[in-house]
Length: 77
Image: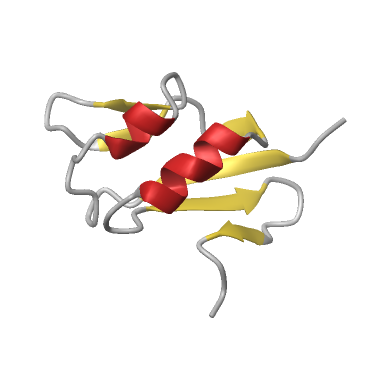
């Protein structure tokens, strides 16, 4: 079985660009205020969700490993 990710969007940072929805349809959705939300807080690790996080223009998306809390994205500096 592969890794499980916990996905969060900081809605205080999100600008509603919709890039996450374009990169990972089904992984994210925009609410009526155009704020992004993960479709599911927990998901199987997948390239589309990672690409969406990497493509967020304001780095509002955080991905951590569900079991350990280790950061997957954004990378630690």
